[in-house]
Image (cartoon, rainbow, N blue to C red; front, side):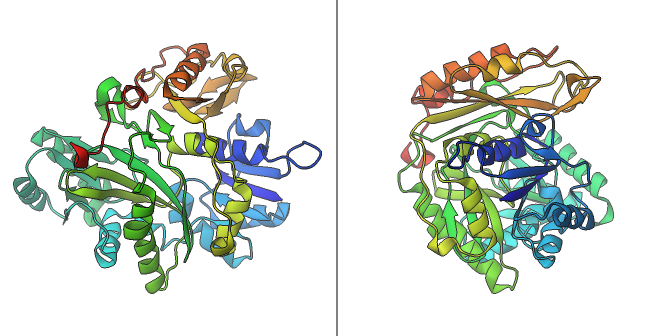
Length: 434
């Protein structure tokens, strides 16, 4: 197939890496892959196109130019901009929800409305339009305070803190940034470990991928501010065996059914962020696309051809799709971030050692914030690369992934050294079992 992948981060590189690993009878890549705009790592195996991926007309024109058989939309911004609507209208099989479906991520308040209508278990919310309302919500819930920007915030619009002043300041910033129509969602705090579960939907049928756990805080032991994600691992040896089916039955399918009932079927990835609390499984948030960095580890373990899964969802044929197959190995990814990320990332520094890391057994490197300047690969964002490793267990995989991280050279860079450490030590369990 000719496959067009929209996006430029490590998530999209993971998708391209997975698609490129599908070989034909001659042992060569089975697909012609195009990416817009892509990044230098993606460009090693795909043809890059320098268009605005958030512009529906530009994406349709490119799809027509290359005669795409499948369009895979990676980030949230093109979805919210209605790119999937435009490409579907032009006749291209597209993996990614409509603009209306993407509201599940684009508006926290809308997501809560859908959850309530579908009977989905989630944290009690206050949708606030004034700071006075925020104060009322704080008084009701108490600490820890959970404050969420209602709109898209690239994974960094959430603050969880015991510091009421800091929580109030974040709410005030959200209102200031959004203007007159700004809204802030204040939620009750959910105890217990968090789980990320990607659910593929064709608008009616759902198929769950393997659960993963990511690490949002910038520092070890979950210290410091939230980031877009500093690492992840899959599978989760501590998660209940019944978790995936429970999420399908009580969360994913009811949500997809409610969207269809409203005449806005959701076809694409429903990212279900979960907390396994002392009161049971609860939804922390929905996203409308693959999460980063969880995609890096989930797709590393997926044995079923990704292209076939995406195409079946895009064409409404998931009901007849075979059960997904998984490699038995464990996957861990660690993000190498630029100096001063997530505040004011330093960019433009040369990156070394990627070839050395890729040469390690069971290790591959995915580009995120990189670009080429004067034939030199340099950093161009906060999260620069994701190092991914596969191994027989968490201990072995952690050792491999950190060998890969140690091979990367970037002045001032930093990374967490405790990704999957507690899981490897058997120190994680759902709050319901405490």
